[in-house]
Image (cartoon, rainbow, N blue to C red; front, top):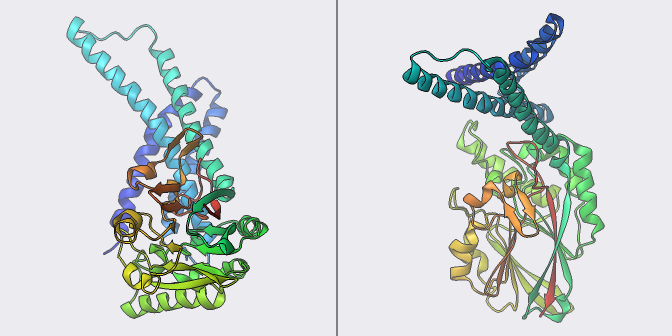
Length: 414
């Protein structure tokens, strides 16, 4: 199916939004000299033209060769659209208010009043619309330029009564949702890797979504992420984006299958991680052991590759069991009801929506309307779930109030 009708529809929608939001600029610049008006109007339409060009280029620019450009185009379009939407809402409220006043005046006196403060109200409305557009422009721009790579280390301690004393104090680093296909600042990404290594964890978990669509996206970052090493190993599972299910451009089923084989090879051979595909491992320290289980992606909204029964087999006698499962919805759906002896589950997937507010006594994110467990540590009885907020980003190339995360989880006996 041709994408041309969709592109035309989006362009018309953008143009309508541009024309409507432009009224705010006209209102606030009409008292300026003609030279200033022409200049500001030219800047407005010039920036809008860049958005149209970006939209037309987006589908034609290779996601492998021009990854950073695609990401920045997406960010620029989002800044432009959100700024004009906010301005448009203010203008719409003003237009609706004037319309209601006109109808009331018409019904009461037969003639709506055209005197008084019409001009000042229009100027106020225009200024309010411009100010309203500044808020999303500043927030989104900051989220892209600073928030996208503002890596934070979040430390937690979990007490497990059955933890062998040999593992008491073991520190686990978790990263999730790298989404290497979205990165546009390699230096900043490297800084996050160095932060993690500076914590000197005993064990590292990666809980999936190495890429957005195709394995080739990680090509420029394999050297960087292969530096992740820990005494007890680096273990990984796959996320929903790692299977190629999110890419619609496969020329054949064989091409998609080869992409998945390439993913397995990259994780195991190039990065050097131990990839768990519905499998388990035994971790041993000074003769004592605990179990590590890794399932393929299982989620209510995606193809379910995970087989927890298969992954769990042989772990029955382990005093402590740790599970890597990309999607946190797996915990309530399968883990807790069927496997009450799995002590801690490590997940990611939600990104905390890359947007939210987290205060000591208040947390909010759009993610909470989709996922019951969307960020941080959760406990039900003696079982724990940790949902990592993600290392990367997808869609919106930034983060607002939900910085990228490196988790350090310490296991204590008790």
